[in-house]
Every structure is written in C-alpha cells, then in structure tokens.
Image (cartoon, rainbow, N blue to C red):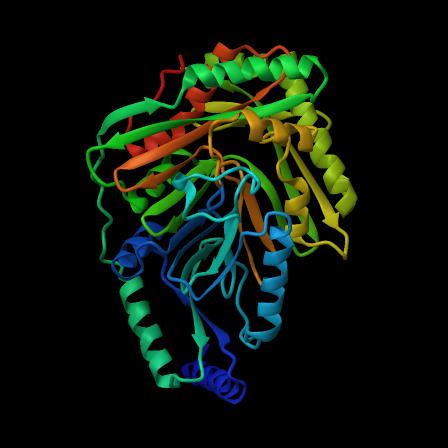
Length: 468
C-alpha cells in the first residue's frame, strides 16, 4: 500500500466526514517484520495500558495482539445481546468502514471481545468491568497469519481533524509499537496466599445436583468454583500470556484487558469458527489427568476412552452440538467415536464437528444457539442453567462464556473462556468446573477442578496441584 494511496483514502474519508458530520473508519494494513506479540503489548503498555488484547490459536498459525480502542460495541440487554452486537457491527460496516482497502484475513477492522455466561445471574463487583457483551475495534493490531506479520492501524476519521494529523499519529504509533529492541521482563511472581472459596459448600451443591438428576429434572449440569490467589508483586499480562503460549501449545491463549482488570487463560475448547461458508465446532467433555510418564499417560488415556461416565457426558455434548449445527448448516460431519485431546495437565475426550453454514445464518447467531453447550452449562440447556443460577455461589462473569473475534466479512472464531482467571494487580480469581451426572462423586469432582486450576496457577507462578 503506497503512501499516496493511504493519504488519498484518508482524505476521501475526511471529506465524507466533513460533508456528513459522520466519522469514517480507515484501516491501514502493511507487512512488517515478525516480533513477539508480548513485545508489542509491552511497547503499548505506557500509552494503552487497560486496553490491550491477545488471541492465539492452538497451532499458533494465527496470533494477534491489539492495543487501544477505535470503537466500542456494548450492551446490557440480557435477552437480545447477540442480536444487538450483530446489528451494531453490521450497521457500522455499512455506514462507517472504508472497504476500498484490501487486507488479509485477521487484519483490518475486526472486533474482539466476549459475552457473560449468564446475563440473568446477579452480578458482583468482581466482574464490574465486563458487561453482558462488549467488543472493541483495536486502534492498532499486530497480526501473524501463517508466519507472515502485519500491522493494522484502524483510524477513525472525524470532521474536525486534518489528514496530516492522522498520518503523524499512525507513524508515531508504528514506531513505538514495533520497537523490536524491547525485551519483556521475565521476573517471576511468588504466591503468598491461596484461598479456596467455600469448597465444602460447593461439594454440597454437587449432592443437590445428583439428587435433581435422579429426579429427572435434567441429565447433566456443570458446576464451577473459584480459587483466589495473591502474589508478592503485580501480575503482568505479557509474562502470563508468554508462559501460557509456551506451556499450553494445544490451547487457545487469550487476554482481554479492561482497565486494571484482565481476563485471560488457555482454553482448549473452540465453540465455533467460521471461514466463509464453512463452520467448525469442538465437543470437549470427559477428562482425566496426564500420567507422570508416557506409559502411565497411555493407560490413563485408554481408561478415559472406555469410562462409561465420561463417555455418557461426552455423548450428551456431541448430541447437542450436532443438533444445533444441523439446524444452522446445509450438512455436518463428525467422527463416530471420540479421540483424546491432551493438554499439559489434563486429557479430554474430543470430537470435532464441521459443516456448511446456511445462507440466512451468521457466526453470532450460531454462537447464541450453541451457548452454553452441555460441556459448560448442562443438558437440557434451560433447566441446567436455571439450576446453576440458583445454587452456584460463584459469579461466573465471562468465565465459560463465548470469547472471540469477528471481521467485516463475518468470519471469526469463538472459544469458551475456561482454564482462565481474572487478574487485578497482584491478585487473581481462578475458575474451574466439571460436569455432574447421576453418579458423580463430590470428592472426585473436587480433585478434577484442582487439576483444571493448574494451567493458570503455573502461568501465574503459583504452586500447581499434584496430579499424580
């Protein structure tokens, strides 16, 4: 993209803004040298602290780091939040985005954000920076797609500002953010306090759940709990995500900063991905710990593949996801038997599902239809979510909820925000849950949640739970 083309595009947008009084978004995309996304975030910390984002898929073929905010889409409308975001993003694209600049997949004007798990649950101060739904267009974006790096400047052109001012701002931001000499700090935090939130009461909710299941009120429910940890120094987004990307190579790594709060984690579970008319989902339910060596790991894996409780739990998720996708797709495909999906601390039963989206449906409409899957809420959906709302003492906020991104073409990807924590200064609230069926044992489920805390504990610098 030539400098003269950028100047002309900005000038056209400025002329439009002055004539109509409406702003216009111009996305400037250019090839750049590869760098660590953590370096990009570190470079942006002084100016954009509190407005930084990170996303990386499991094979690291797609990673982006964003800083600043060009535009915000948010709603507290519990019943229509997916439609609100969809409608506002569509309206914004039609009225505001300059489409004349071509940009590769994963660059340009994309939105990143998420939804809360249950907008009808009474919220607490813990999640006061994370509303029912919030998405932003990052002001500056560093993207790596299939080993090629790009820098995107999303410039909102207003009627009262001159074009040369925008060009100067972009040049200064590019110089600051793409400073390759910055080396993110590698200091380790030391955990000074670990507090489990009412574990005995949580075990009693499992007993309530199994009783309700035996009364045929629902088939399965997922119950989560919270662990609060305190460290000797302020926790750093760049350091935590760097460790997560290194330690959890088979998981999505995400971070969304909202002021002093940051929700981040390493989720193994895709909710849905859309590329043109193809959609992909993941059924991930039923789990067991990793072995201390290859032999034990193989034995545990075979045990999981033949364990009736876990297979039933997994089948419930597969059935629901296939049912939902079948309604929204021309066709769907999936294997007839689950495989193993292994992360550093835990292995899961795993079944992928893919299909071709019908023309009258969108990524967000499918996200709404799928959320929460039986792996995060239960089955049937309505009664299990109502049970969670009534008995779970935890405010889930964005935990176990859809987190993701979407571009102007409607492509994008959403995961479920598990293996995650909410960090504020030197404190973190970590979350973990497990699927409860009729014969679930409270002590076994408690141990399973301890294993699921480990990815975040390890990344934060805290002691992990011994799984052997």
